[in-house]
Image (cartoon, helix red, strand yellow):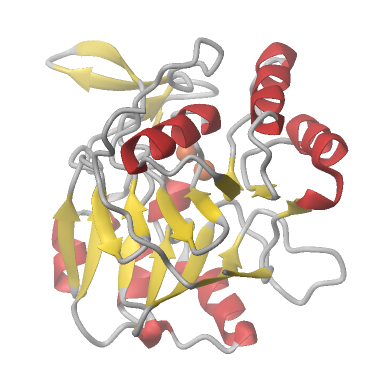
Length: 297
Ligand SMILES: [Fe+2]
Ligand SMILES: [Fe+2]
């Protein structure tokens, strides 16, 4: 293996609270809404930090679910935005308003671009004006735009822009930029994930939509950290529009990695979820609002 690009270190404990997922859970009091928001509570040595990955498309259900979970939004230390799409970003100012001090908002440098779909009609599905640069700063967000792998705390990194190497993880989801009157396919290069290295367990991937391809993300995480054991993952795998071949190859690749825990939801899609359930058995869990997970060394 090549020399690692980044020294990740180790985290002692990770607790994840699902503040939002598309699914509310069975017999659950939590609210489901299209989007995702995961609160990571990480202990590393003497440090304890709370990192919020993504903020859904509205702050309301997130704040409602946080109240049920007994989480004070003021306890959040930083916000990490996985990519530009509205279902991950449009709750941002609403969340920042509930935090009474300045906090970092970490994202890729192209996060503020427009990102159009044309099906079923022309629509910008990127970050909204209400959550643009000015609104973020006005509401106490300290914008940190970083495309390279980046340490968030001991044992926790951003993947930065993900190297895409697999041939079966289709690049892009049919979104476009319009530059100087030209329509250019947008490969969502801003898709970034958080990676933890949990003591005695290995790498744990926390993704928003995995637009880079979950297998690419994992290969990238291993390559940049030099840590070969991958413990598991949580997030959206964006296989909802994937054909059977891609789903099969993705699940095959994941099953060859000896993952101990696979928690998937949001944009993963029923076909892929059911395949993951069959292949991973007890090691698979369905993501839903209110779901809490704890992993420690
Ligand atoms: Fe997305
Ligand atoms: Fe999404």
